[in-house]
Image (cartoon, rainbow, N blue to C red; front, side, top):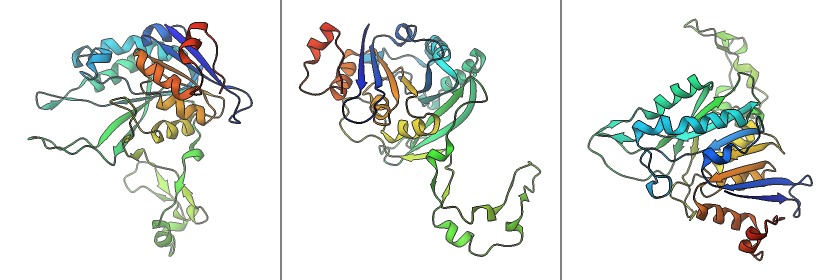
Length: 300
């Protein structure tokens, strides 16, 4: 296993020295070297079942849960009690029907000690076109939120969105009902007071994220857009917190975390991806291979 640290200190991003650690090796082995309760946010997209066979071996759907549980056990250990784990994953179609391995994984992780707190949907605005005899093209993926406890850090104001045009018409002429708490007619206990939003220009977002897939050449078959980890980093962390991606790939999570002044840890079994991320983090003129051999740090 090769580990390398890149302190971010020289170009004004953070005077405290933001650290980016890259581990080259198997996630199960590399995670064992990370301290207990040291990570604030985990954002990752592991290889889906039967995907990326040349790099990750192509885990079969019926073996996926057994393969992933030792990894999630380590993630449970390194995550802080106030931290959050975001898992990007999607079922595949097998013999004309959706596989159940993602649902089975959710249940197994709950038995492992995880709380399945929320599910976000990534709506891909530019999904690849296609036609199948019994279904339409996939335009969304799951972003599963897991936590260790019910009390975790969440900074909702950081991801608020503009109120939108609906406010101009909906709030223009309020009824008497709009001016008081209007309880749900179905007895759910929920209610709303429309007048509370009269002086506000922003609202809390939904759990559906409308993001385009990555269009640039990331040298990776499944790179997600920078806006995806950025949104969750805003929501669940603050500056100098630590973000982990145990399936780093093209390093999108690390690059975004570094730009947002978060410490980060990336792990990938493919040396080519680790080298690629190092090139993006290090100045071009630095001799990367000489640095690896000497164990020197690369100061940005």
